[in-house]
Amino acid sequence: MKKIKCNRFILTLCITLPLLAGATQCSSRSSADAELNKRKNIEFLTENGNRPEVHTTASHLQYQVLAEGAGNTPTATDFVTVNYTGSLISGQVFDRGEAIGFPLNGVIPGWTEGLQLMKEGGKSRFFIPSDLAYGEKGIGPIPPDSALIFDIELLKIGR
Image (tube, rainbow, N blue to C red; front, side, top):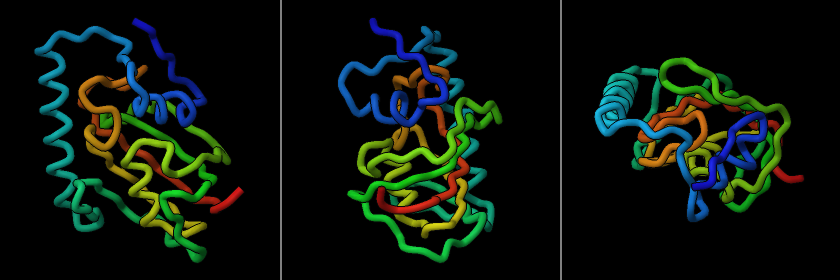
């Protein structure tokens, strides 16, 4: 199996590759560990969704507006540029990027959906369930069935 290493280029490697066939996880966790991780992540999202400042979409993406933007809102086919920090629910940061540009429809579904709720100049925190991220496989430093937390600033829409 090919091992995928996640690093500062998470948007080009770890966020887009799961959309391709053959994405793999980097660790062979026991099924008991995987089940425990899945349960912890579901419990986190259940409790988090009850917080008044957290909004939940029909797909179960949770988001918190940190700063309202004043610009335009992107569509799924737009190219966007963002600053971001990604972490696990434990708080472990697995990646960050500054002024990273990409086509919005080329990333994990949680990002595609969430960024369409933002305006240029805005900052949000996304709480992404595993089925809108890397699912049962996980990838790199992201274990299977992990909910992810991203702090994202939408810098601009377009190239």
